Image (tube, chains in turn orange, purple):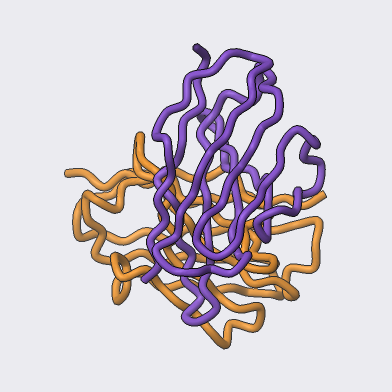
Length: 117
Length: 109
């Protein structure tokens, strides 16, 4: 069955960096576009970034553009999110999701990122 | 940029009642509209895609309708496990930006 498992979250100071990972299994990872979506505590969902199956195309929300970088390693069935210059407002649960026909059809359980001094 | 609005913000109903949730887009999204359910402490779960298609394993009591700018998620008879927050979502063709609505909370009356 499809599984997505995020890791790498934690507590980081403002201005710091963190790298999130998402391990995929149960499907042909290299066939699918993938996304990162976040959810601040008690708030709604916010799409963060998107990467095509071959990494040829990426896109970012304006709120993270220039600070976050999405990447993937199809040989390792893994998705990544490098987050730099973190701010308090980046505090959220970060989900990876498989993108099929413009929707996230499978989601991981999420990893919590807390940005605080 | 397409903006999604959802109404009502909260819907208080009893088990067995019918729930009707609305999602409106600021411009046409054709039929590229999805609905998700999220329970506390859990990841969102895809319910409906392309406005009216149920995702794998989703019970028939969930149905979606609409096109263009106005969409509806209907739960025909609420089960206890259906009390949750529901989000609509669209992804534009170009650039491929996902947009979520603010959510509708369905709680027990």
